[in-house]
Length: 468
Image (cartoon, rainbow, N blue to C red; front, side):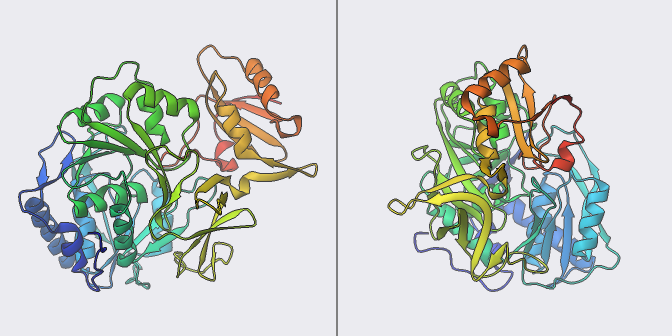
């Protein structure tokens, strides 16, 4: 593995990179169901491949998967790739309107959806009986991408992002070279959605290649997650986003879990008090991973040595230009017209404000570039105000945005009062940075990947007690 993965040039990469291995080796443990070994997975993928082929899917074709987390999702995805087709991943939590918009935009030939699925909203894994339907007006793939994903849409409309098989293989190779990532014979208990890049590559694809068991809890509750950890003796790493850390950190007295070695989180930086509460309760490392749908993992700090900075992942080249992080990327990842503000001259423009230390190479992410606004000629970093507000005692969550003025959406802890929160913020933040409008809400909207939504159109629909 040290020399890197050899990149195949045909659909055989699925067998070589993902499905190879001892027939009896358990690769998937899905909730309370029987474990799936490699022989069983290969048989199921072959079965779904035959069904997709019978429906008309062939090399160069395109299929959309709109399935909840399930063995059906995994098998149909690998089967589509094994046919040499392009797979479009649509989160099953999207509304019918959003799905229709995505299908019209991406025009797959076939759609695989759930004819029947068990379980409710908190289910982390479902039993699914899938159905295959032809999509009117569907077209074969018009790009070489094996995968199309939609970005999170946390700050605006989602972008369609394409990745070739070689891109996915290169990212798996990066994981192999990162210290602190689970190795063969270990387990990953994943709470990250397989429709999105962290759960898909960091959980499913890497696990299949490296011989790491992928375990999905029965439900997305702290009790079920900890039960999934306790169900096996192998060294176990949790994989999720800050929302899951908050969920687990709220457990007052977790059971002894000697097999739990650490947790890796993607997405936003975990609030300091949540980070400390989690580490105190579980006594394990809490690592951070910086990545994007366009590239996957970009930087890591899996042992908490550089917090809040990360070290570039192997093979990643980053630079700072005018306060924005750019990442070397030979081709644009975007499907459709290329926006030069997103990619140009071999560089992906992340839209993240940040810096690269010239001596150590460590990268500091300072929030979204569009979080920096000018008020009365003075620069205000909304992410700085938001992190300060979210860290105050009595605040369970906060989002700070800018419309006609700085506005704060805040979730208060039981017994906390807004007047006291405002007093505490006045002690920590200059007057010109402070919110002029306050919205006390019961819950902050999140994307399907657990990121806080900062789109003002969405936030405006959240019921609140408003104070100006």
